[in-house]
Image 1 (cartoon, rainbow, N blue to C red):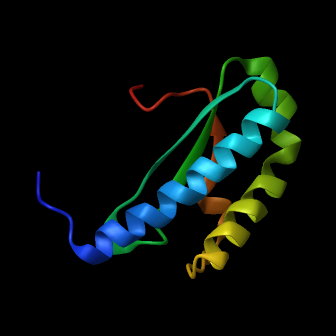
Image 2 (image 1 turned 180 degrees about the vertical axis):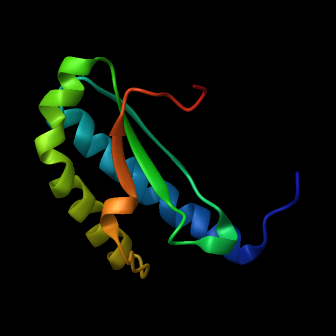
Length: 102
């Protein structure tokens, strides 16, 4: 695997800190939320960022769906505080049942 550049390491650190903070909040506020995980393509950052909140079952996922926009706004605000502007916050956060290995 290719070594990450300093810029890519900085991008990764920003995303990790925001993801960790949102994950802690979500576990407290959203019942059934298991974990938060993300993927991104560094050369297309921030447009390629996709943060996923994984839920344990259909009921908890369905119960959390009305809250999705609120969490997308929280992600956008947190990234903005770190100096990263998300053009379309709706594309950067989704709720899912799939895990990182699925």
